[in-house]
Amino acid sequence: MQVHLVHAHPEPQSFSSALAQMAAASLSGYGHSVTVSDLYQMQWNAVATAHDFADRTDHDYMNYALEQRHNHKSDTLSADIMAELDALFAADLLILNFPLYWFSTPAILKGWIDRVLVAGAIYGGKRIYSKGGLVGKRALVTCTLGGRADMFGDDGIHGQLNDMLKHLLQGTLGYTGMTVLNPFYAYHVPYISDADRQQILSDYHERLAGVTDEKGLIMPDLSQFDSRFQPLAT
Amino acid sequence: MQVHLVHAHPEPQSFSSALAQMAAASLSGYGHSVTVSDLYQMQWNAVATAHDFADRTDHDYMNYALEQRHNHKSDTLSADIMAELDALFAADLLILNFPLYWFSTPAILKGWIDRVLVAGAIYGGKRIYSKGGLVGKRALVTCTLGGRADMFGDDGIHGQLNDMLKHLLQGTLGYTGMTVLNPFYAYHVPYISDADRQQILSDYHERLAGVTDEKGLIMPDLSQFDSRFQPLAT
Image 1 (cartoon, chains in turn purple, brown):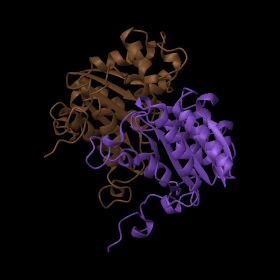
Image 2 (spheres, rainbow over the protein chains, first blue to last red; image 1 turned 60 degrees about the vertical axis):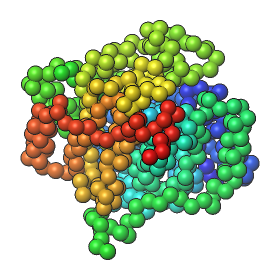
Image 3 (cartoon, chains in turn red, cyan; image 1 turned 30 degrees about the horizontal axis):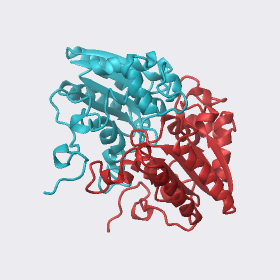
Image 4 (tube, chains in turn cyan, yellow; image 1 turned 30 degrees about the vertical axis):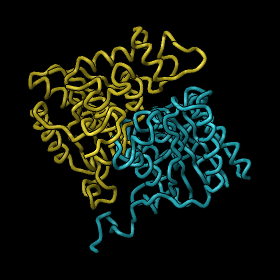
């Protein structure tokens, strides 16, 4: 299996970075090939602009998605986007590894999503969910947070953490057609003991052994909707 | 009322930009004072790094939230963050105006959230939701999207759009204590007629007249939880 791991933490000594290193080592150890994009180290450009396109289809009005479509076809996307897109298309498993910032990805990783998940190549028109451009691939979100596990769940103050991340799990990764695995959450990280952190790393190592066999989260089922995405009568 | 409008669209001629201009003009016309931060025009730095802090409390390990706390206290946050924080604290109403990118904000606006909603100043420890640092202020999300309204809702293929935005509406704006108004969504924008777009602008103008009187979305109620955010027995 080919794995592409996208990591986004500003501190190389962080526990999030330790999880990224562990994943790369463990998955290699299990016989997979791993590429890593460390967005902070790469100084990844987070912001979608007209500079992403060497060949504008419309010079007077910048519609980002339309330019993505055109520049993907004409092979004129900027080099940083092309490199990530190649790594993504080559991968069987995508891992997004990050600290939770405001119940979502840090902006630098949001910029990877905005710029690399190119309209036309990855989705478009009716090619979403089980017809999306990345069907057959798997996606895993690995995420550190300060909050305790007991702050989440149906009775937790914030509700289900997967619901907080619906925009990412369903609206982004599921939308592209990927099989989205249940996230690996490391809770309360700044406040726990080193032994507890070692336990999390060990749990993660174990979990990654079975990552090719896990079932994905349930996503909207296109067979329940007509071609205009209207619900079919049941 | 003082209003701070944060806008994030790469194309100044976009409908999203028209909504931002309309909001500034309408709210001024209604007698309010409006400041606007156009993040693309400002070339806002989206990425949280150690450069945000002139006086590091720990030079060997960068904990972003801890440095936010320290540098806010010592008045050593970077100038761009300080200016936005001042505008936010001066405001009675914050408007976030943007095109929906992957069921969330564009990365440049996520970077505003990551960098400006400073730990210590805005939230921290138990100061969240109704005890958050921005209690008494209002927040409105104004958002354009390509999808049709009938793709959302309990029977829609994507579910409720407010659920997709839970990370922003509850996990970010509500978390800070702001009263979060129901978002203003402009659906299917690239595909509708100019007349339909004019109608949306006119609806938005009307809506903004009553923005001081609207009730907010329901947020977690701290009175239902103990001091460790465990649910109280009922």
